[in-house]
Image (cartoon, rainbow, N blue to C red; front, side, top):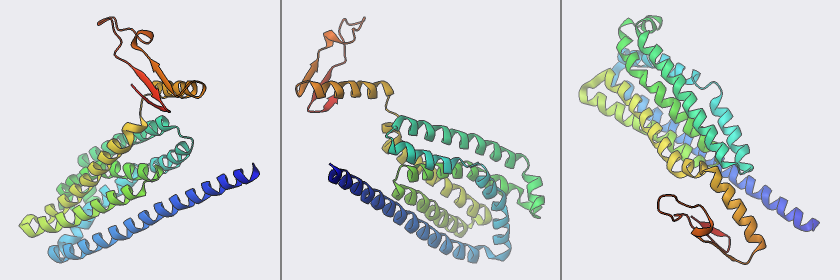
Length: 274
C-alpha cells in the first residue's frame, strides 16, 4: 500500500510538472512571437507615417491603453488563481460562474472608461499636448472594451491550463493590428487607418478568445448542476448494481401534456445519457 501511494503521488507530480512546462512553453513562445510581430509592425508603420504623425499616433493611444490596464482591478489574476484551484477540485460550475462574472465586471467597467474617454476626449487631447488628436482618441477608445474582453479570455485560458489558446489570442491581436494598420496607411487613410488597425486587432482577439472560450470550455463547464447530481446518483447506484440499469419513462417524470415522459436514463458500464 505505501508503495502504491508513493507511485500515485509521483505520477501526480510528474503530470503537474509536465502541464506546467507545457503551459510555460506556450506562454513564453506566444509572447516572444507577439513582440516580434509588433516590433516589425511598429518599424514599418513609423516609416510610413513619418515622425510627426507617428508621434500623434503614439500619444493618441496613451490614454486608451492606460485605461485598458486600469479596468482590470485584479480580476485577471483572481480569475487565474481561482480557476486553477477550482479545476483541481473539479468544481466546473463554479469555474464557469467565475469566468462569467469576471467577464461581465470587466465589460461593465471598460464601458464606463470608454464612455469617459469619448466624453472628455478634448480635455485628454490637451492633456497629452495634442489638441487636434481628440477625434483619434475617441476612435481609439473602442479598443478599451475589446482589450478588456481579450485579457479576460487570456486569463481564463491560463487558469484552465490551456495556454496555447492564450498564446493564439495574443498573437492574433498583434498580427491583425500590424498588418491592418500598415495596409490602411498604405491605402491612404494615414493616422486614422493606423488607429483603426489597433481597434480591429483588439476586436479580432476578443472575438477569437470568446468564441474558443464559449464553444470549447464554457458550455461544458456550465453544465446544469442537477444533471451533475443525477450523474452522481446513477454512478453510485451503478457501483452497487449489475452493469446495466434501465429507468423506464413510466417510473420517472410524468408529462401532463402527452401522458408520457420524454426523458430516458440508461447506464451501461458507467456511461449515461438522457
